[in-house]
Length: 97
Image (cartoon, rainbow, N blue to C red; front, side, top):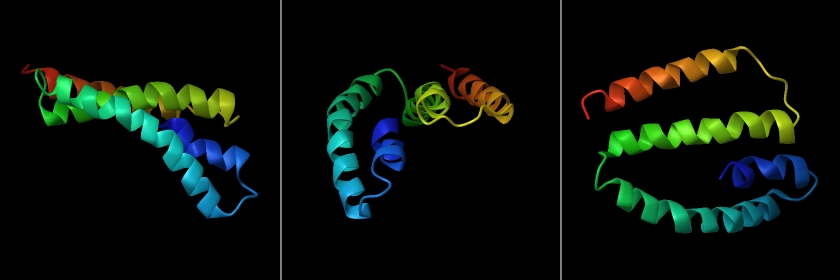
């Protein structure tokens, strides 16, 4: 989903926005084919809040390297603090599980 949402900023910046939408939705469609069954399976053992926190952790684990290595964004120490906040969210979401 990261590439679908942000890849167009690098590759389709000169194209009309509707082209970026069509390309992004085409990429995202295949991820949803995996995500929806995964959520259904995950919901057998986790509640919705836990699934969402887990999704955000996975998203950030993918997004930070993507933004630094692929999009050539500069690393900021704020990413570390944000990551620690997510660790806290994981703790609180799963502590009673």
